[in-house]
Every structure is written in structure tokens, then in C-alpha cells.
Image 1: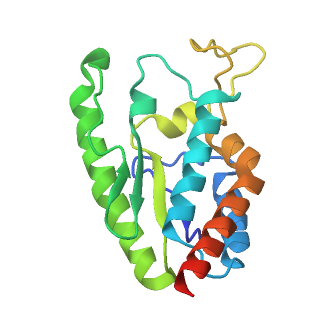
Image 2: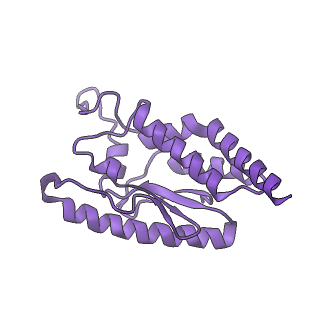
Length: 186
């Protein structure tokens, strides 16, 4: 199970999100080897993952923008670093469901991050609170039934692809912040 990086969506509803858990498990093993990792290093590295999802293919699909707005980051100090008050659009009268789901995700994410912080040290929990996020992530389509994405270069697997592309950068940033932290303690 992921320790420092945890993909979290309470509304998965039985949808297996391909590769994400395996990638995060391996990433956590690598981060585990970095002595004195810091919370700020994890937050900076997470920001890179989001940047990759939003700027490099496959990008986060956008129709109304609510999936992007549902992204959140909770820290082991109990703070919501990103996503504390998203402005969801009234997508087919579903704004209330998105707001309720987001509130639940923030509470659950914060609780899980604090729990990880107590047992494992600095930790973050991040992901998308939109109830349909895992379905969109897994919409690979077929040759006979292709998916027509509204945003150019967007598509399935955006979350796992961004983590995979950011792997070396994540380890570099966490190690760099750990070195800064170590120098500051001297």
C-alpha cells in the first residue's frame, strides 16, 4: 500500500484504475530510501505530477472543467494544500453531487494523510474527487467505439502516465528537499 503518495478517490465504485497503485507502491519504495524526506519535497513533487497531467499527453480530459477542479492535495499536517474550494460548473445539474463528493474526499483525504503522517512520517494524499474520475481515466475505447475527447491530446491513463513521466523528477525533488532540510538542521 502507498505510504507517502496515495491516490485517493472514495467513489471508485469497483473500477480498477490501471497501473496507478503499482506505480505508487514502487515510487513509495524509492522515496522510502531517501533519508529525512520532507513534506515540502512531497508537495513540490506532486505539483509536477499535476503539471504533467495538465500539459503533456495524455492530458486531463476537459468538457466542463469539473474534473480538473476536483483535484485536491491533503497533507499529514492536516492542511488542504490544493482544492479547498473549487468552483464547479453546473454540469447537467450535477454541481451538488460534485460539491458533496468533494467535501467527503477532503475529509477522508485529510484523515488518511494525518494517519499516514503519524505512522510513516511526512505524507500527502492527492487525487480527483469527481465521482466519475476513475471511469474517465479508464475510458480506453476500442477501434469500433473510439472515444472522441473534447480537449486535444487528452485521454485515458492521464494520471498514471503523469506519475510515470515524473518518476525521476519526483525522486530528485524529494532528495533535494531532504538535503536542504539536513543542512538547515546543522
